[in-house]
Length: 332
View 1 (tube, rainbow, N blue to C red):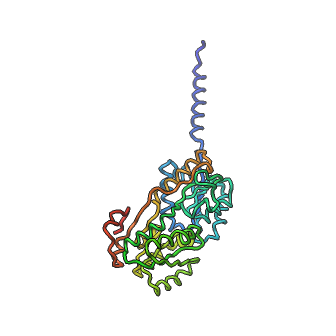
View 2: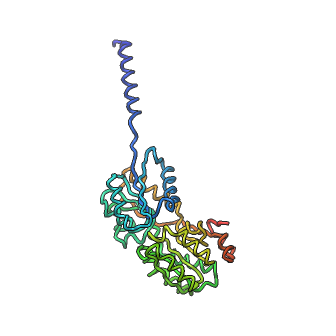
View 3: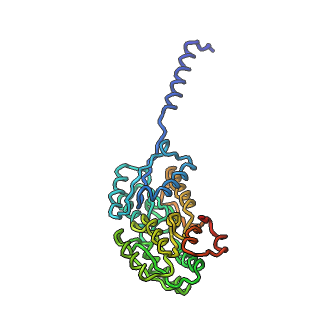
C-alpha cells in the first residue's frame, strides 16, 4: 500500500477541523414558551420565578436554550383572547397558562395545535370541556389541576379551629370564575352546615366593588372571612383584601399564600412549588416529543398550611399550639 503523502494528510486534517468547527458553531435550538397570566408581572412574580427555576432544574435556561414570551392580563378577563392570539402569532412551541378556566379556554380557542400546559388554576377541566378525561385529556391541553373538593371544607375547618367561637363567616369570591361557582354552590354550604357555621357569600365582579363590600362587612361584623382567590378580580387584589381584614381585626383564611404574606391570617392550598415543578415536567416531555393529549392531567398530592403569627397577635388571637406544629410555615 502506498503511504499517504504529507500534503494529503494535511488537507484531510484541515477538512476535519473545518467540519468540527462548523458543527460547533451550529446554533442550539431555542424553544419558545408562551406564558399567559391573569394578573400583572409583580403579583405573578413568585409563580413565574417558580416555573423558571423548575425549568432550570431540567436544563432549560432562559436566554440560552429557552425563550419565554410573557403576557399579563392585569386582572382584565376580556384581554385573554387577545393575549392568547398574540402568543399564537409568535409561533411559540408551548403555551403555559398561569390561571384559570377562562384563560385556558381563550388559549384553546386561539389554537388547536400548540400544546397548552395548565399550572393548576380554574375549576374541573373535564366538566368545563377543556379535556376529555384526566387520564386521557386528548386534544392539546394537559397539565396540573388543583381542583380538590375537600379544600374548601378544610379551610373552614381550620378557621373554626383557630377561632373556636366563630359562627358567621363572610365569603368573598369572583362569580365569573368557574372554580368559585363550584366552591359557592356545592362545597362551602355543605361544609358550613357540618361545622355549625353560617356563611354569607359576597360576589365581587369588578375592582370598584371592593369598597362597597368592605363597607357592608364593617356594618355586619362577621366573625371570620373566607377569601377564594380564583378569578381575574380576586387574584390581583389579595393584598388589598388582607389589608382590610387586618385593619378590621377579622380572622381570615385564603386559598392563596400571597395574601398571608401580605398580612392575612392563614392559607391552605396545594403546595405551589410542587405544582410548578410538575408543570415544568410537562413542558420538558412535550419539547421532547410527547403529545399533550396522551399525558394524564395530575391532581395535587402535597398541601401547604401557612399561618401568620404576627397577624394573629395584631388582631388579639391566640393560635392553638397544635395548629402551629402542623403548619408548613409560620410567619413571625
